[in-house]
Image 1 (tube, rainbow, N blue to C red):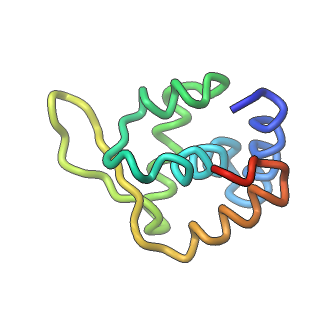
Image 2: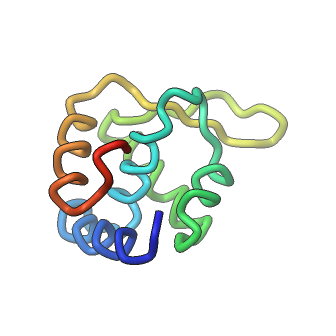
Image 3: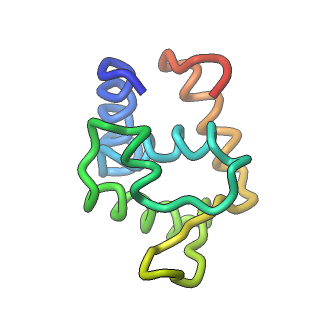
Length: 104
């Protein structure tokens, strides 16, 4: 994700979620749902502008609203996967409105 898009999504996220990384993490997850369970380092690779601890905070907030769920730890790592939620339809529509590529 390029810097300009990350900053746009972060600013929107601060207004929507009160945390600037929730929406960018959600947009990244939306584009990577097909790869199965995700770890924070994988998200960090895609969101090179985000701090590791802030990504975990974003994932925890997404879990609180039922958009993701945390899986049992394996090999000392925390794994997350997206849940079935109407939230993802909103994320897709809003991300595109904010300038994200049509193919997330």
